[in-house]
Length: 164
Image 1 (tube, rainbow, N blue to C red):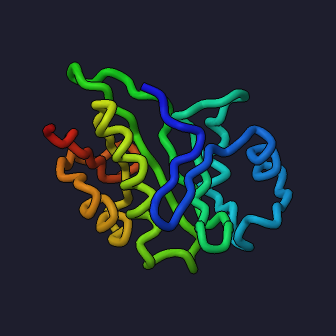
Image 2 (image 1 turned 120 degrees about the vertical axis):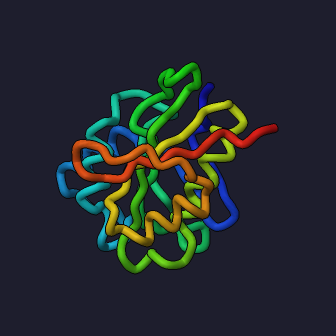
């Protein structure tokens, strides 16, 4: 299964982060279309996984459609791998502080999940137990399976593939 280079939602665009953008993010160079607080440390960490060349399972910008401003990132930590006979991928996401609380993280995640559902890919996410806003996003998006905690103390939650 492949994912498109850009995923549109009602209020957002989710384009793949390019190698040039990655290099700017890691070097601390600013782009005019980036929010003043972007990239965050988590965004910079995410782009370190980006290989040169198009990777449809790599990190993406979260871009507000109304003003074209990049306010966060979302993406998978690599392509799906087999887990118990089902392809599964891990997702991560985050927003700058003043973009939080308006449904952007939920909308961005739902945009990705619509495609993974169609491709039969189960998705998991890890979240710190005290990150109530992120846990709410995952709950709204159907992450109902709690798998315990990882080595970093984060809760590992999975979203079953919806039945047809």
